[in-house]
Length: 153
Image (cartoon, rainbow, N blue to C red; front, side):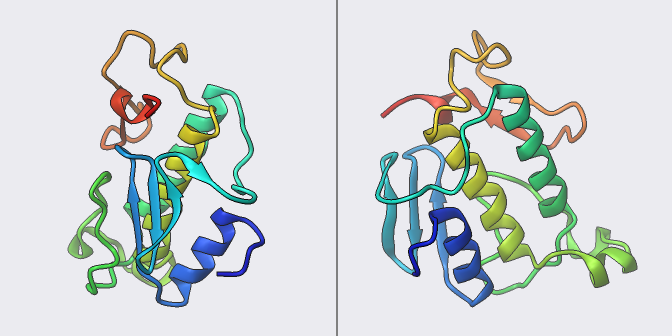
């Protein structure tokens, strides 16, 4: 991977066919089997700025909306362990033609979520997370952020 920033380099790699694995539990990112972020530690620029909690959650909601109606690739790179997208038969013709490819949309959503956790934008002490075991989007009820993902390792 080129070393511009982790977020954009990873999305470019996925668009080029790379396999990406994101673990929100262990705060890890692997691209084609190589550790890029390991237990919340990384080298270089992350590519996602630290923002307040409301902005972070809005960014995740936007990425989820794109992922939810993305076009499946059926090659194993499009399944998310963490988030659910619509099945192909639930997509409209317009979505099938105009939506992002699911592997890219999945990587964007998962890596954005991971980045906002490890850069400190989302914490267990954040107002919407404090004292809860999850946050659920009002705009996208299928979008849930588990508080356990926010815990420092």
